[in-house]
Image (cartoon, rainbow, N blue to C red; front, side):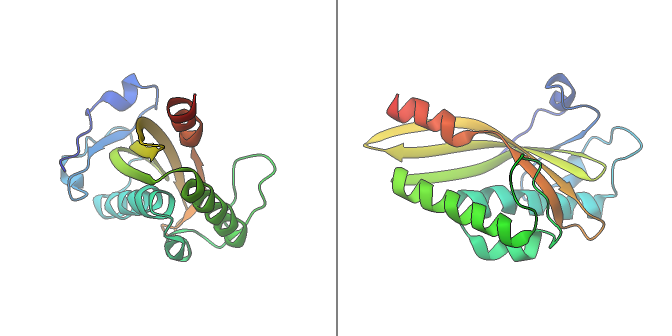
Length: 170
């Protein structure tokens, strides 16, 4: 499956001064470098790959084992009321995976485009789910902040389950 990003679209989408990256085998050679805070190519590549794994594997496939590999032990959630730390993050991801397994007969997230700026990566995703013989698709947006060790220290994501539920269940 070919994946594309509209270069320069990050500014139009209100994402600020980012380097938009088309992801096809995490090809950062095509990145448009915008601003002085754009990390070097190796750092961008590593962060984009972690952002892809966060969205597609941890959230999309419910592969909870990778959380220890890609999230910092000092992870903090920007959402009010969420406990800090990697154990609390694991519990939230496990609950979300259980919820999706009980609600959908199929669920998939595909990372479609990335924008990189400083210690942050934003990800536009295409999310599909099926329930009761009906198929739904929506787009999502995730925002990950990285520490100096290239592990995720904070993340935010759009309400993909709410958008899917509206389409599937009314």
